[in-house]
Image (tube, rainbow, N blue to C red; front, side, top):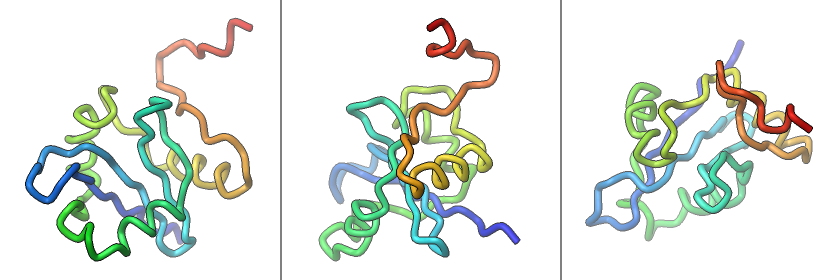
Length: 117
């Protein structure tokens, strides 16, 4: 049975409630992704995510959100029109846990930028 992924909206401060980040967590497996603004794609970093969520100083800097809310705020955070589906997130989590590059998720209907090489 697949476990449900947990989504977190992350804010720059406890006073600024505009989402600035997203975490995707599979708590049962201890795996997590975060939106990496520098690279412009999802990154596998469960240690950073857990450290952030467990730090009492950050308690007002994130909210647990459902998938629909994560989809709504994804364009604000990522600049992309959508959020990868759960199957894509699970693949990224498996690849990250295996030490592989998570990389950019393939967008349906979009050309693969590496495909021209």
